[in-house]
Amino acid sequence: MANKISYDKAFEELQKIVTDMEDGEIGVDVLSEKVKRASELIKICKEKLTSTEDDIQKILKDLD
Image 1 (cartoon, rainbow, N blue to C red):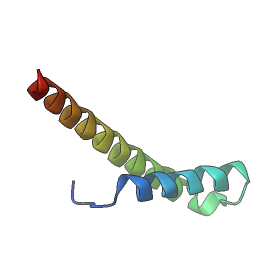
Image 2: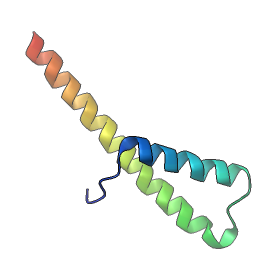
Image 3: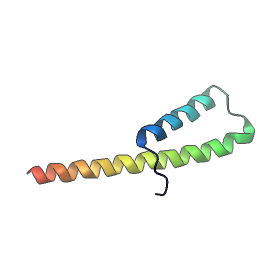
């Protein structure tokens, strides 16, 4: 993925979007844009978690 944002930054941005939506701070004019960005951030987080899990599994397998 071209986007090199860290998991922590992606998760933090995602939390901000969700909080703003819950608080009604995102107007209808930008709602679609924010939902698209949230989708991108979720994909980034999922990929990083999957990659980390794979790395850990490899390390544990090497220990056996």
